[in-house]
Length: 257
Image (cartoon, rainbow, N blue to C red; front, side, top):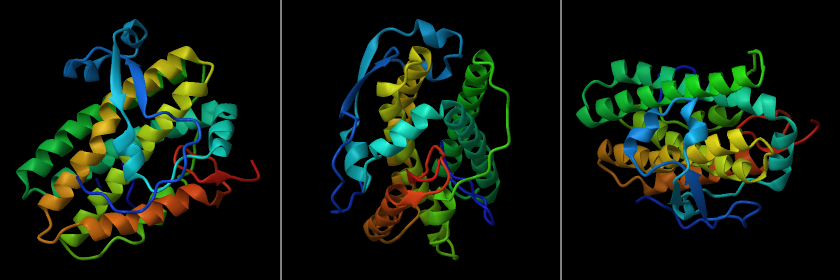
């Protein structure tokens, strides 16, 4: 799950910023999936058959993020699951479309091209799977506007290359990490076991994406990217921790919902 850019085509480094205390999420999760990379192509029907537990250590995610998801957001999300599922589908579709735009714009980097191609396949698979979940739940597709989250980070993106692309990849790393953290949080508390199992399944792929983005960002920059990572860590944490009038998969603390 990645970024939706407006006027540009979009997508170990850490800072010393302290993460906020945990609310509901532990540092390890048992994913109902086999330890095999081919499982990334599992279709929506076979998700229910995944049973072999796989431990995924989420502590790098928690260390990377500058704030943890609040219990208030978790409660609001659980009470508005159709909206969260719809926004999740939107995010997967936008991520694939954005990566496709990038693959045409940044053709000079083999590593970037290869990663983007892999990302497009994976995000479209996830989009198809979420559509399947919506169909099984009898949930019709509805228009849902984008929240403030991605725009709130992209407005700080530098305007010259390769710095612009470096910032986009760093932003992508935070979006991937936040997605993973929220999949984990929701999987612990939602009553829909099939959906909870799917979110645990997604942790296997989502938990590694942020490091891929950081590595690509560093490969495109002659300078160390630690300062930019620390900067966006603060920006992302503020967007997640401050009051937000819209509930979305990546929204801040919910108010007036």
